[in-house]
Length: 335
Ligand code: ADP
Ligand code: MG
Image (cartoon, rainbow, N blue to C red; front, side, top):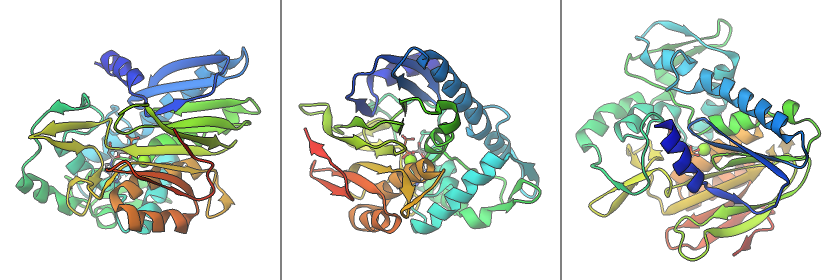
C-alpha cells in the first residue's frame, strides 16, 4: 500500500521545483514524498540525515504510527494522564496559539470528524475516486469533541496530556510537516539545499525559484512562480490532492470545524510563505506557515487575508474561478 501511495504521490507533488540542481534524493515519510536537493556530492549523506530526522519525528507525532504520542493519546480513556514528548507539547502549544488566532478554524481536535470523512493518514484516497460522504447526523454527533481547550488538559511540568472524553482525538497533520522541516537547520548546516516534504518546502543558504502547482491543471501544471529566500518555507493547502467525489460534488480533506464538512469558502489553493513570524525570526516559522495555510483555506478570502496580514506572512490565494490574490512582498509571476 505504502509503495502504491509513494508512486502515486510522486506524480502529484503539489509544488514543482523549477530550478535544476545537481543532485536529488527521494524518500517516503509522513505519508508523502520527501525530496532533498543539494548542490554537491555530499547530498546523499545530507538527504539520509534529513530523512532519518523526519522519520524520527513521524514516529512521535503521527496518529497512525503504533506507540507514537498521539496514537497512545487518541486511544486512551478519559482522565488518564498520557506521557508525551517535548515535541508533542511544543506542537500543542503552537496549535493552541493558531486555534485562537484563527477563531478555531485551525483545530487539531477535529480529528474524529476527519476520520469519519475517511481522511486519516491510514486511508489512502485516490484523487477524484467515487466514494459516499458520511451522514450529517454522524458528523453532528462528533462535533462536540472538537473543543480543543476543554477536551485536553496539558501538564507542561509533568509532560502529560489528559483527555476529558474518551472519544476525543488529536491530529497535527496540518502543522507537523512544517514543524519538522523547521528542525533541519542543524543537519543542513551551511549547505545550499532545498527540502520538499509533500509540498511543504524549505530552502537553506540560497534563493530558489519555486513553482505553485495549478489546482485545476488546465493548460500549464504550474500556476506561477516566485523566489523562496534562504530560510523561508512555503506550505500549500489545496482541495485537489486528497479528495473524492460523489454525485458531482468534491469532498476534500480540510474540514471546517464550524460545520464538520470540507471547507467551502471559495479557496481551492493557498500557499503561505515566510521565514519569520510577526517580523521576528522564529525557529518554528515553518510550523506556523503550515498551520496558517490550513487556517486561511478554512477561513476564506476576507478573514484569511486578515490573518495573513496580522501575522505578517506572504501568500498566494487561488479561488475557485482561478482568480488569485498575492499578499505581502512577493515577486510572484503568473505562468
Ligand atoms: P496537507 O497535509 O495536505 O499538506 P494541510 O497542511 O492543510 O494539508 O493539512 C491537512 C490535514 O490536517 C488533513 O489531512 C487533516 O489531517 C488535518 N485537518 C483537516 N482539517 C483541519 C483543521 N480545520 N484544522 C487542523 N487540522 C485539520
Ligand atoms: Mg497546513
